[in-house]
Image 1 (cartoon, rainbow, N blue to C red):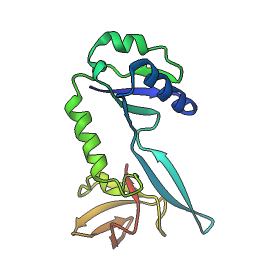
Image 2: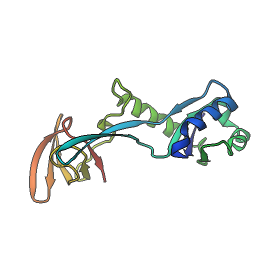
Image 3: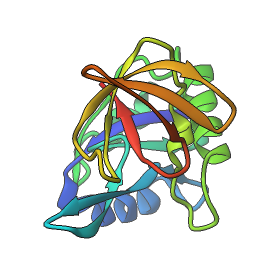
Image 4: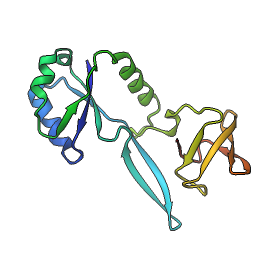
Length: 165
């Protein structure tokens, strides 16, 4: 059963080690990661981030028992377990599958994870439009027509990274 837990950022390796020793070897961890490229002073900088922030998805067959979670509450590096994880198993599994389908060969999630919606606002992370906010007006197979202020232009999806606002 999957569960979601919040961890202390600098103690994730300690948390993973302690959970493995407490629950056994059949434990799986998943936290989707992405690389964002940003231009600062005309130089491209890459940043590796966890898409879930300080949250970690964890699978073990013993998580279906509340006793297991109570016994693991005070493990070093753990802040808390999110409640009601048993109710949202289908949602957690579908999110993990969607992330894994969008991963490249290095294990990083591509920007295709987000479903693009017409008339929604997004912000660029890369390219000449970095940090600019735009609205999608039309979508094609590999291109999107965007509106930034009063300027309408066509950009390729693969060439730019952006996130929903």
